[in-house]
Length: 137
Image (cartoon, rainbow, N blue to C red; front, side):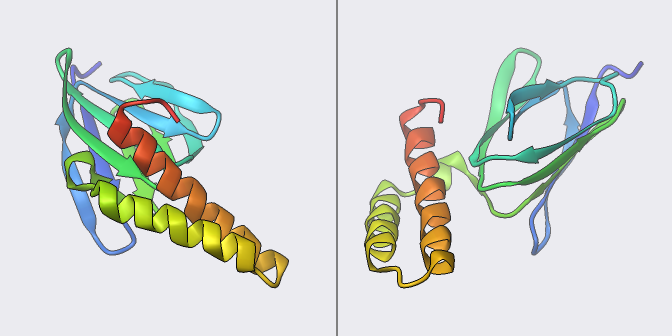
């Protein structure tokens, strides 16, 4: 068994991160899960939340993902994210504006599809705000 895991974070546009890590904690649809070297094969949908990247016992990166999928094998964890941004790059003012716009769009929605899209945008923006506050979403 290797002592590290290859972690790759991919967005629709490009490869965002590729490196050896000791562990990653990923916001799975059914709850957070940790991936370590030697992990059993695992596939999960993601919910909006924060990926924590560990070197030793220290979190060295915190990355917000809006959703996507993760695949874990014995030697790797690959995250295909709908959207990904380093937590330090999130802007509270912009997030608050996203929340307000999404709430307005929900109120003004004329179709179920419009309402569902606005509700998804609201859930992502609220998850970003919770991530900035350091609270689990």
